[in-house]
Amino acid sequence: MDRLQQKVKELREKKGWTQEDLAYKISVSLSTVQRWEKKGGEPTRLARRELRKMFLKNGVEGGYSGREA
Image (cartoon, rainbow, N blue to C red):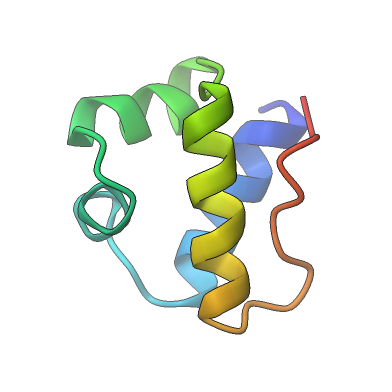
């Protein structure tokens, strides 16, 4: 699992969210989150921004910077 996949999954699990929860919170499909975590798909710039904002807003330490790849 590469760094991006690991970070998204780790931060999501820190909050106790399912993949579906995360998808809903940042307005992407469940299959998009699954692709990021399992197949190594790259989030778009907009998705990266939303991930970062969402994790910062929810007080996740070591938040997603949007620059990991």
